[in-house]
Image 1 (cartoon, one colour):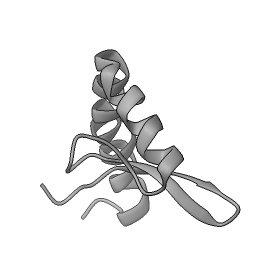
Image 2 (cartoon, helix red, strand yellow):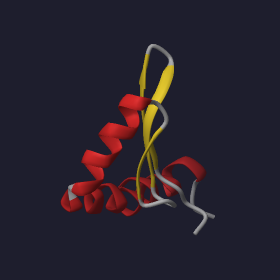
Image 3 (cartoon, helix red, strand yellow):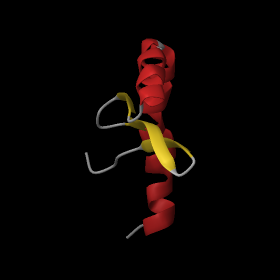
Image 4 (tube, one colour):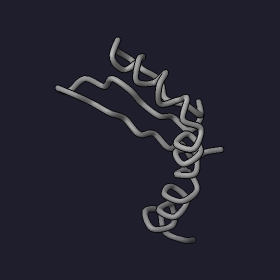
Length: 69
């Protein structure tokens, strides 16, 4: 619950789309981002892969970054 995976896409210093594991889908912040989010969220295999990043990327690195007690 405490771990959140965020994958942001920016252009010209402006974030236009983001995947947030707590939301479970892509969210657009600009007109182009909203259109891309709608298309990307239709691909269920891509959404499943992004959700899996919380376990494969985040959980793997927590022990490296914060050390094991």
